[in-house]
Amino acid sequence: MTIGIRAVDKEPLSAVDYLFGMTTVDGQRVGPRPLSIANAAQALLSSTSFMSLRSRIANLEEGLTEVEAIAASRMDRQIEVAVAATTNITLSGEQTLDTTVTTSASTVLVPAQIDESQNGVYVTGAGPWTRHPDADSVAELVGLAVYVAGGTKWGQTTWMCTADAASTTYPFIVLGAGARPSKMLGGTKNLFNYLAVVEGSEVYPTGEIFDEADSAISEMIYVGAHATLTIRGLQSGSTAGPWGRWLAADKTTVVDTVNLLAAMTAPLVILRPASARWFQFSPRQRNPNAPSYGIQLEYGTFATAAENYTERVVAIDGIPTPIPVSPAVAIAGDSIAQTATVDMYGSYTPGPRNNWPNYAMAELGIEDWYNYATAGASFREYDGQDDMQKISNQISRLYADGRQANIFILAAGTNDYATGLPDLGNYATAMSKTTRETLDRSKTLEAARWAMWTINIHWPNARRLCMLPIQRADIEPTLMQPLADGLSAIARRYGFEVADGAAEAGIVKDFEVWDPDGTIGPGRDLSDGLHPYGPGHVKISGMVVPYIRRWVALT
View 1: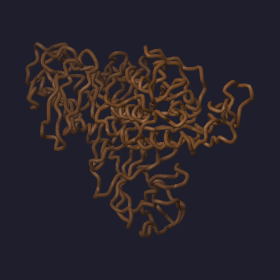
View 2: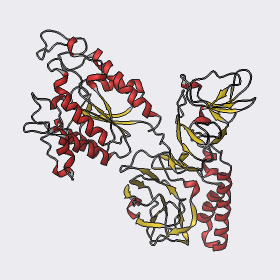
View 3: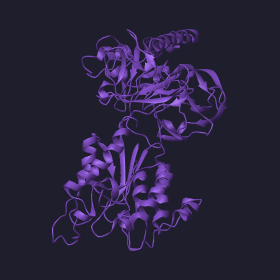
View 4: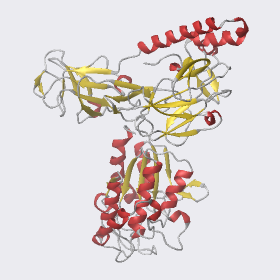
């Protein structure tokens, strides 16, 4: 359900903008506010000296009542069904599902059709089934929670549809078992809901809440186990704080407090205490100016493009749900993945190579991706390398340039091969080091551990894929197996999915020609026995895309 009016065409709706308190802050649309809050603010500006404190409070209380009414009217995004059908079924006629016999007008969750566009919640009948009236559109299916009441295997489980607004298919995931689920609501990207601000109270430095006429507090915001938040846009003019407080899972115990003064002028990164699960703050504190809330609060360590609060289900029965944001991809690797020219000073120019990422991102419809892969790059570091030929520098540069990523692809290792792998190192030694600083990056596996460890630190919530080297014309694949085994073990240790390029890409040594001088001609998939050309790009893309596609709806 959409609350309020969003004015896209300013001129025809200027009167509506004024009435509902719409405004523009730093080029972003802000509003609407509840009617009585907007009217009260306008009245205060024009006649503050003639209004008593009691009148001002009365107007604010009226506004709070209106906000509560809006909240109470929001659609319940939760349906209970009789049973779930977790195999592909015919969507007609009464039948036995999970030991439960359907009868006329039974409600059924259908999450496992071969054609995922058929997934959803249905009402059974003797003839063709119909979709449940509260789940018969994309808008109603997105983020829908479904509780399955009956059935031997799937009874008393909770499921969620992970489709987004642009989806034509409707995948479901099971979230867990238990009685009827309890839901927590929150923001998709911007976690701050200006409609839920309570005027007349403040977060005190001790973490207590006190009355204060020229202050305000946010609602309690569920942050789960996310390590960092970034906040910006707090209203200037506050003479105290503003302060925020971290709360434990019980929403009562104050874990710690944080001063947010810097967020009035620049983005501020704040670290979540380990035992905190909720955050609450004063968007303005002892500030006589009229309320103006162009605030963005988001996960991670970088401020991204401003976006209004959009509500979603953030947890069911305490289990965090996937964050449905647009996929943003970061890539580090060697010439086989290179699609841009980068340097250590922040320059990024797409080209000159056209490689498998171009094919994969186009097929997936992903527009937000940055690829720092560089020809000649390797995990191990040695004298004479260019800066960006060190995988460690690619990762550090991605982070320094503020590249947001909820999918990270690490595609390297080909240039780490040398006859006999003298600089491979070994897994046990690499994993015995207790700090990143003590890792010997002249050894491939220690350098690879540094890379994957660092990716986990900088992009802790990203889905991660490690792509092992493909087959090449000059080396028998079995000779590279110790390298593949070591990289795979470290990747899985750090939560990476592993795509085995030698086994999965479909590029086979027998059909390639070693031709580094370009005098003989290309093989089937490699132009010179090492670098893919058109057919090879398509094959590697075909290997990578299935890994990413199943993440896109969950990122």
